[in-house]
Image (cartoon, rainbow, N blue to C red; front, side):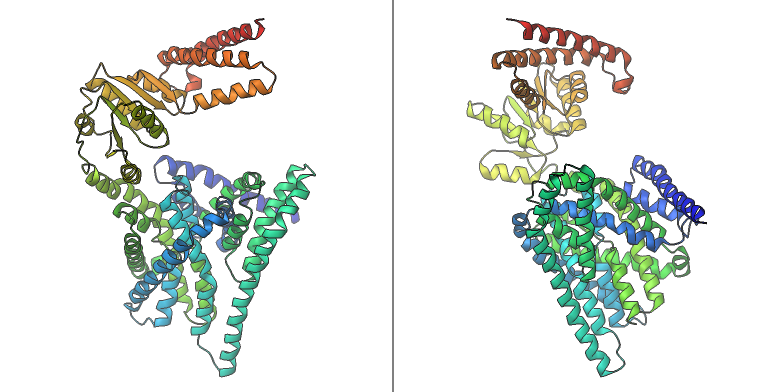
Length: 605
């Protein structure tokens, strides 16, 4: 019997993995994103699909740990000083958005027939809480967690996580009571919940300040890797459990623990230990959300649910847009934030369950709102795709002609970021004038304020390059980090001006080959020089004399550039690099020559 039960559990695990492995890459390949892939896979294998799983709530409860671990990793990247700098965004921007959206969504709820203000308020409050899992996943996939707009969204999510206890207290306060004694007891219970939450937070902070670092130092001396991994999991799950016991969200507890460990020298080790669990459990969470979509309820009340989803997402999105614009975000950023954060979140399920348990809302309302929130989460990836294809290009196209090139110079520099700024500073210091173009409005505004004239525009547009004087220019420097865009710029420039000298920034060796074929004269791999310097220091550290290490460095620099030119002729973008046998054999031959030459340098007296 036990063997059969164990086998059944193994089948469940394999089913979850198979559904994710098949569906998620497919959706990703189709450009629909991994989140929608997980949701679709969950719906397919859940109780309202193939019925391979019947208890989606238990899976959701376990998989919520993925969100918890995600917040822990975010906390590791956010030092207390940085968190303090974000206090205005967390409590100012976050509270402003929540209050405005709460009021508007409550008014929308009152527009429905036979809906009390208590029901409207609870449903609105649940929908105001954005899905931390979805927003964080999208920001992570776009590598925007560290950007200014990413930090603003993270700040709002943190404030919403803090709201769960006050909202639960309000639900208890507005719940119908049978007697004054019961009401008094309920008020006492509310204050107990607030006190318990404050105490749990204080205990966690104290443990983080005075216990965790000494504990990791002690365990590190054992040099047992699995013990460190187990301790990392203990810290995450323990902090989550402590916060849940105190009535706060588990994700908030993990985030606080991460912040407290952000200045520890074990930070990178903790991140490496937690990351694999985070990815798996976060995927499982989205699978659980897909399973929890009750198609029977949706079909039975499809008109009400569909109208509610549209009304609440549009209402919340409008509020987010208004708050973002008041906070001086651009129209494009405000619209993108509104689309990304317009859904309801996972913490709404907790609030709705508490409200139903205290008779603030009935079971039908809870079921309908649960379906509304799950559908809003499922629609968010589709809304983001639509935004990226039709809305975002409109604003991009609209802003493309903002800057007119006032003065043409023989040297054109495309890209004024961390790479291009060094080039421009060197050229201007030597007295050369440059025409600098960048596509980041914040960079353009900042550099112009600093005194470095920079034009805003998309250098991929032929008319912009022509306006910059590409036909008569002597030198073009392509310093952007977008590989495909850099190739197209080089190709167009070479076609228009055959005598133009082109220096291009390359991401890696394959990009270098493509740039050579596109017509660039010189290609600078963005990490080659720093890697060569690091390799030279490594040789010196291993006992190679400084003069020989320097000679090897100079030889390798020239030799590698020559090899890249040779291999570029054999490069075919339509053949995968390790399947291009002529190129592979040529690379081996050149590598043997390189090793032989370096050996001769080492053996010279």
